[in-house]
Image (cartoon, rainbow, N blue to C red):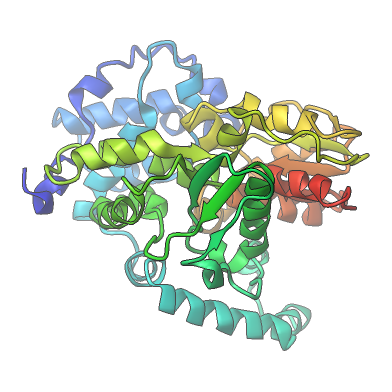
Length: 427
């Protein structure tokens, strides 16, 4: 099939829908069902609606769009499902089918087509926001009550800009510290280059400490996760092809990602491009090399000798797309437990979504805040001063939760905890 016509396949497939036996074991694993108690806002209910549309018994109407739009796509139902229903693939395909008749909002389409894939536009926007913060305009707007009440939660979730942006490292190679064991490529992301630049720096340092020569490929781009989640699969495919061309068959031992959400989409490039005759095989090779940073480190004889004591109490929140999408749960915990003096205290429901889910906390702020309330209730049940996770979106949501409830928790990526330990114990 011609690459330009791949969108014709973007709808739920019968072979995937038929796997659901409607047993209901997914219900308790679904954050929206837990909060709203509505069958049509459960995985079982959404699959039923997809079947109705696929068979022609129902149309893509406002109700269908609403119930599928309220899904976080956290994929917790996949872990709970005994029948192996590929719900993540189904919800993304359904949203792509919806997008043909009802495109995403104009602002979202502009952001996903012209902002996130453009290094120039992102750097320009990031600089403007950085000045807005540094000049005190953000604090002034808050103190003067200029932010509408309905937007305060969403505005508070906006990440701060971190200068220098990580884009300055693009095209550079960072040598291993000590004996080189691996040569890896690191994906910087899109917004993460602006608002999680120091996390990316810490990721480079931790990889260097573990015998990696770290290359930051200059021609990489946004992973396409947000585009794919919004139903804009053609835009996601274009970015997938660019990243594959930038990194596949370049002699890397691994291609590293430090964002659970991005990594889940990157590991599904082979599905995204399976009908593209020019990229199907290359996508498979790319996916075979793609590793989450926790997964990669835990699969090696990672450097425990240089870890210094970090006497803190910490709890871990699973990134949904790392635990349910990529099936990686043990690796981050193994890394954290290897740090001398660190006490890992598990919270109840650590693998239940925090309500971030890409831009869900902005598009569906009210439901997102309900889910966050439940999450912070579980956090408060644990003796811990820190929350660790493995995805930037989760970090933003949990930081806001700690601020909103005044719990005092500092939220860090697992890699940042390791970096503090390697750097003389941190604080």
